[in-house]
Length: 103
Image 1: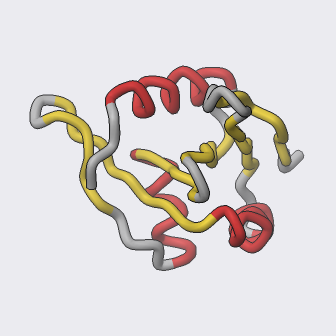
Image 2: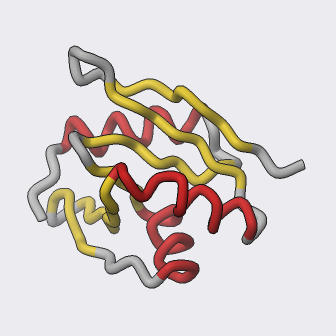
Image 3: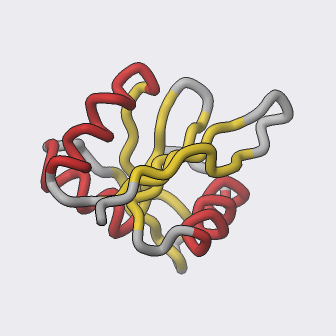
């Protein structure tokens, strides 16, 4: 899977804002997750993971169509996870738009 370093960096920048949440980041018509978040979703839903990033800094990647966002958020929340959703705007910049926290 080809995944730009710029997107990987942005994911980790956003993740620092919500370290207690699983971060779902929009990339086009897909929602992407990385590393520990990808592993958690994979264990819960069976989502297949791939490797991306550079040879010296590999990243676990998972993704699903944005049309499945509500389904995945529901599964994660019912399993006890807090979820942050980062959507992209017209200029393709990504910002956290919604947080569903478990208290």
